[in-house]
Image (cartoon, rainbow, N blue to C red):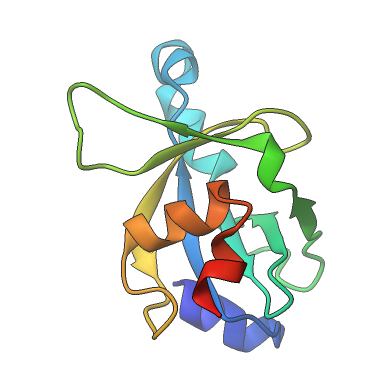
Length: 131
């Protein structure tokens, strides 16, 4: 889904993935609303991270609002029940919440799996270590 979205939007990026909203409180309060907070995350060639809310219903595909995510606002989360799942939290802003990196990723030389994407999100020196 992320590959089709990127090609339709003509957004230049070096990688991206779908982040599924996984806030435990919302899961108990209203689990049917969780999917409405899923986001697409892309990493551009200048090492900036951008996100937009996924429109699962496909109604408003022309007016996506991209929001820059600052690495200092992203924190790794872990689950004792699912230790191999890659969670992260956006600590503030419009996209505040806990997300899991889905298997819907752009795989390439820079990003081969969910673990690589998590490193790119939380490590301020990630870009320098790639060079």
